[in-house]
Length: 451
Image 1 (cartoon, rainbow, N blue to C red):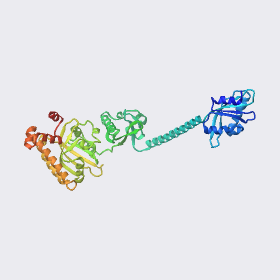
Image 2: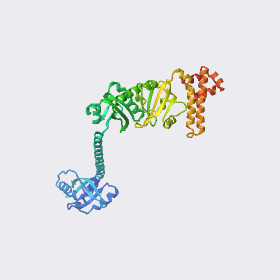
Image 3: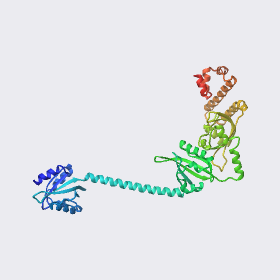
């Protein structure tokens, strides 16, 4: 068969067919390449084939052509052709000897796509290796920092409450081997009576997402400061453990006295968030554990007539202490307890914040003393806020207090008969109901009754 015809037939199923004569000169070419590469390839006619390949490919090309001329079956070889514009044109060649001649047809497959994919794969592999190396370095730094910091730290899985990591300092404070901590329930590291507080702390931190601190008994009394954070898809809690300085005997007695006092006691930080409460407050507020109150604002449990939390704390800072304030502790069970309380700033040398001491009012005090006390307090607040608040706002707030007290007094006087109370106050029944609703004097049962 004519060599040109052979080359054309082969090129129909290959990317490139090159006919090489006995003298090593390219006699014909047929291709299925793109126009840019094809225009350069067709200029190979009449040139020595060895001049058209890279230096590193010449030995492989000679072996391929000699094997074909000797009738031996040769393996496919990869050969690159240098391009005039720079770069190489890679092909994978096999060779056939044309019967009756010493000419050879080189059958080539374009490897540019394969080379590009290999290059991308290699770059991707290098990127993965570099990223893995960076991760290993970061983990090594983290491990070194985790073990050398002076603080005792435990990392907990928020989903199951189990310890993921703990450093040596934490193990020493808890009196356990470091390896024994990993995988254990965090609450199981503490005494049985402490576990509800620890469980409540973890739950509160997970729900609110804000740092929280409680004190519990372990190997001595320790402080647990917990904070939630994320690591990828994991929701974790970091707990910092610190020993609580042992108090002297009189100090210990004083702490025990305050913790079990008949008066409710609250300690709050500068922002008005609760940091500690005693047992009496937990009882009055219907809260099972101290951790359920810690981290919440004061006004979530305690309300007082005529003042917002910010104004109350401002007055405490200004005067140092306030006494005989009337307020209400709103319990989680829906019950409200009227109290008389005092507030003061914590002394220098302690963490900045506020202290509140309160006692429940007896039924007699609630009926006879609260209304007049609220009015006196409202007037005192009015005087104290002159110069800080516009007069129209002061008058409005004081008017609201007086209106509320008048409505409460009328309802008490008439046995909660709204029709008679409205007549006593000179209001329509509808207006009375709107004002009661405004001042929060209408409960769910009352609203259902109105409907």
